[in-house]
Image 1 (cartoon, one colour):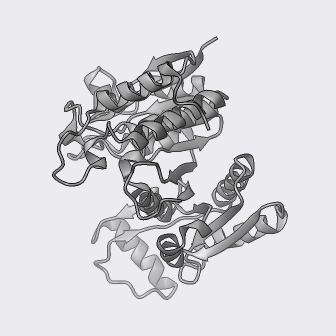
Image 2 (tube, helix red, strand yellow):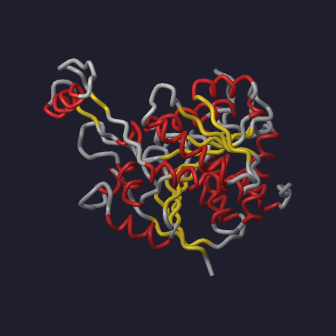
Length: 365
């Protein structure tokens, strides 16, 4: 019986890279029944009443898994971010972004293997903001002054909420994920020396879990010290779990260290659902040009296969990616030196991986 998966093509380069990932997944021989749904402007263009259609949400809840392309946020104020809306509606709270160096991809970190797990519902990215001079900002400023804060009447304000429930479930997820995936260490990244209430809560719960899970090494580090460690001795870092904003920055950092954000896969986990999407954005200037690197989405597809219990197929996809990159014949523009010619397109990269999987020469290892 085929696996039921929601496919959300997105916009910009999304439809191209999602199609490439679907082709590679299907080339493994795993049967998937795709329920194609829309999000953002494509949903509105198709006649939906909202950029976040209920039909799309129902599909993901029904299948429990979605392969999602990048979706642009309206730049004209036409609608709020459908990406944020989707995550909130599905209560996906933990984002997992692995970064690993690959053969044939230029990098100063040939042995990189780091996973960043990020809490995605709170922190500064919760979107609780008040423009300078607005009634909301003035009310927050007035309340803060009552507790000794020296704030100007003209201050713009962003709030950084943190609750023990949200922090605890993300840290517990990271510990369970590390254990299930055979990782050796979980590092809690924070800045509790400055943000004692919010990051301090993250640190406090992390140390509680360290005491309760002695089969794993669980430590903690200031986030600025962690960035220095990553670029000096990345082999000392295994799994990082952190807040929303730090996780966004750190996951892009390690993606760049591994060879580029175009290669970076990811998945957002929530109760009963998992949404698989690459780390890159919609890059509308490249839409329809058959130019985008599909490997971030294809590698997200490999994570999807693992989630579905199709471990052998996922191993074959990962091996095919390594083999094709290692040969060096097929590379998209982002994997070539500036000004180099002969870049492969999106379809050509997918073709090479499909051919490798069909030949059986991309054996898992």
